[in-house]
Length: 107
Image (cartoon, rainbow, N blue to C red; front, side):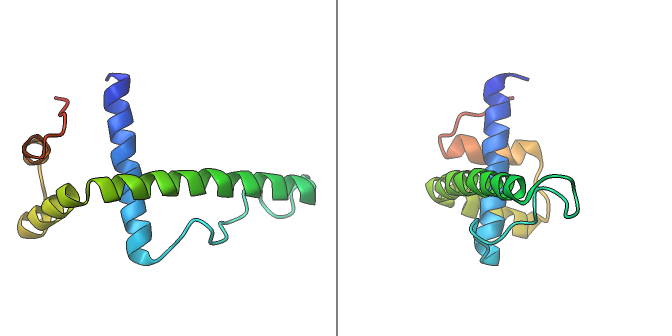
């Protein structure tokens, strides 16, 4: 699998996560679970540093995914409508939708 295909799959996964977060009303600034288990040997400052970094990473990826969802809203709506009709989509159906939308499709 080429890096481009992997990047596209990662971007799609991020977009789906963002769509789910947006639909559920969640936002990245909501307090995530602690990155380090309570009661560990790490100091409070280390916990805070790790949690801040996790929030930063999640926030950046949330923004990236939100941008991807907005940029491809039409295609996502089309795929959603087809999924509601068929209850499942095979790879050929998704590739056909991507091709009709002018998106590059990896085989």
